[in-house]
Each structure stands twice: as structure tokens, then as C-alpha cells.
Image 1 (cartoon, rainbow, N blue to C red):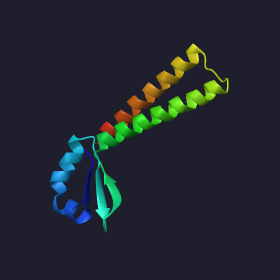
Image 2: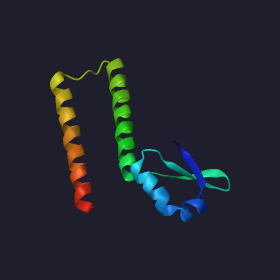
Image 3: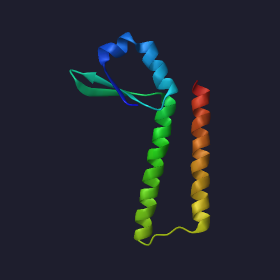
Length: 99
């Protein structure tokens, strides 16, 4: 459930809201002068969102290429999928090494 709270309240309830962000995929919108100002979310939820966005962009790009007649072979599709998996694994390894 999307939450919107004033920045001052976020500061007062920082521990509680930080825990909410860590355990939920739902972001918290911080308001300033009654207008949305910032969005806070847990890093895991943020990474999931980025993966979904990249997937949607990849599908849209693939659809555009298909319409233009630029179709990949089965081997090219497998190679691209393997590259994506390798890249995802490498980014997780980097994240784990930082923590």
C-alpha cells in the first residue's frame, strides 16, 4: 500500500519507516508543503523494480525490432539471455562484496 507522509514525520519515525521499506516492496512518498517530494524504498525493492523496468524495455525493443523485420536467430537469443544472466550474477556478487 502506497504511503505518503510529511518529511518531518519520516524523520520522527525513521526506524519504523526504514523497517517498512526494508520488508515491503511498497515505497513511501515523502511530502513537503503538502506535495510529493521524495520517494523512499528498500534497496531490494528498488533492484526488483529496475529489473522489471529493464525487462519491459527489452520486450518493447524486441517488439520494435520484430516489426522492423530485424529478427534474431535462436542462437542469438540464447547468447543474449546468457549474457543477461551472467551480468545479473556479476552485479549480485559485486553487491555482496560491498556489504
